[in-house]
Amino acid sequence: MIESCSKKRMVIAIAFLIGLSVFVLIVESELAPNDTRPHTHTTTHPNVSRQEMCWVREEIQILEECQPCTDIEMNSGSPAVCGIARYREKVKCSKTGEVFRKCDRVVWLDERHFWTFEAVVSAIGLVAGLATMARQKILDHRVVQRIQRQVAAGV
Image (cartoon, rainbow, N blue to C red; front, side, top):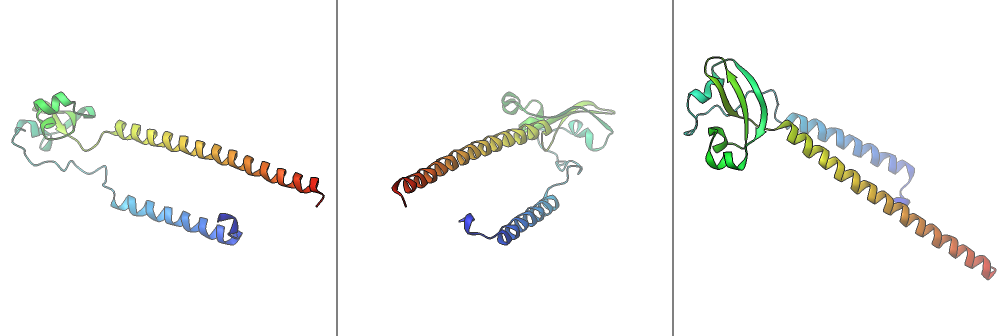
């Protein structure tokens, strides 16, 4: 099918696909949440005390980056944020001290998922490329054999 397309049609199709990709990236960047936004989970929860919400009204220092809560922490509810969220971040409030707050995402986990995805896609691409090369060799060999039979037959 692709062999029947002219060079002009191929260039137009590639330009269209590039334009569509750029459009999707622009729309996605506009619709994606902003990472610099403040934490939206400021509502109190029955398991979280007012003291543990100190990060809303006090200066904070982040001691540990966002980490996923373990199964034990989620089941026991200790720290309290693990009872209501999947991720926790350890912060030090200026007056209250060290507390945990829930966070939206784990950066290193997102990066690991991205690189895993890239590795899988690269492996699939490599296998597809090798399969294409093998198929092309088979087709070229068949063409050569057909030409050899025609020459041998004296056509």
